[in-house]
Image (cartoon, rainbow, N blue to C red):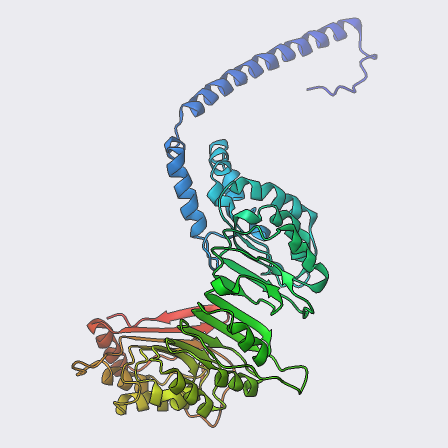
Length: 490
């Protein structure tokens, strides 16, 4: 085809007429081809219109359920189905709405897909105006559904400052709210005006102390959980059953517990008082408390004093990071006259509390050496009065080689010929492989790059026989962000 910029003035009249006729013929031919292509396009379009996709034929209610199962199947922390705004374009309702018009219509008309939102970030997080706009469009689509809102996961208080005013407009629908609170912006909670009738969980963190009461919710019929609440928050304490307290001194913590008679689950992380002139509180009996978690790795002296002021007669689950003062712990358990069923602690605390752990059926032990684990298994195997009710044993934060021989002896002793005594029916061990070795521990040898040592065939056969008989054995090894599971299937 000739170029449109060609100079035809050098051609004769006859040559120009011939060239003009040729171009006219080519144009007519192209028009004919274009008409043919348009006809073909219409035929293809008709064929496409006749195709019925199975997902489109489903009633909207069934499609909504499928979408809900997809979102609830995402790997997130509690509650299931929460969507992180950082990844909202790659998963969740926004991602589903991009597939086709039918899906978009269903997603936009399914409020339950929009009621759980998390905002997480990395340390370099900066407020993004688009997130504000996204949340303004997102929350109305939840309509009347209860909401789970988490602005605390990213570890940056700017998230609360940026997004709280938007979320506050829907406070009557809050089922759970998490965020940072500061003295400077505590007045932001005036927006909600205590209008949180459906509130079930409140998670507040602060790096500051409050010098005056800060009203949050004076009346919330369903308020049952409060996480990281500063002591000066005005909350319906008498209704709360699940409480996590951080950055409180022992006196402040005990004084607050006097106002929470229905408390069932308590987790505390204690701090030193600012003044040496401490006014010790009156003791408190937590009549309904069944689960107690005390996490404090550095200031156990103060954690220990905490136990001298409480009694928990219905305590069944106890988790403590360490036991530098076993006499105080034993005195606390004797005073409470409780029957522990679940214990999570370090190995030394297990030995310390064993005299009062007769009813413990679930035991979780963390961070021990291979030699300590071997000795522990030997004690369980040979001492029938040591943890006699043990049914489930979990070993976590383990880094050494696995003493398979001692583990096998322990499992066999607590599985076979038990008669009417409880059997150890579950054993789980989580091992994180590290390069460092302890030359003084004969079990701490890791000469290869394999994520886990394999027991010899005789021991492996014994473990498989136990699994075949019904004992659950689960050994998980982590290395280089990968994990390997050995279930010893028969």
